[in-house]
Image (cartoon, rainbow, N blue to C red; front, side, top):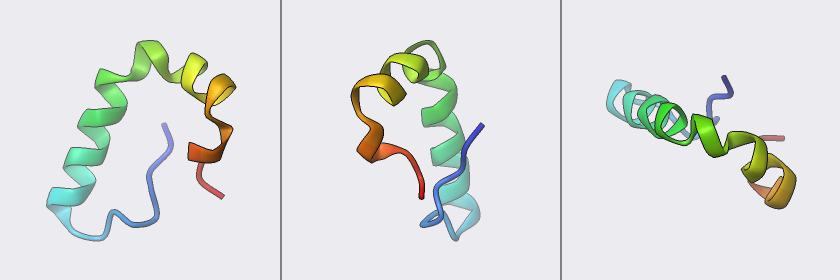
Length: 40
């Protein structure tokens, strides 16, 4: 799973992971329809 570079604090990292888990089912669609959201 990808982790955003702006997740610096443990809380931010946890929230980021939770969001990724919740969106896991839509991740493929998100990457296909919103490539700008992909980390660089």
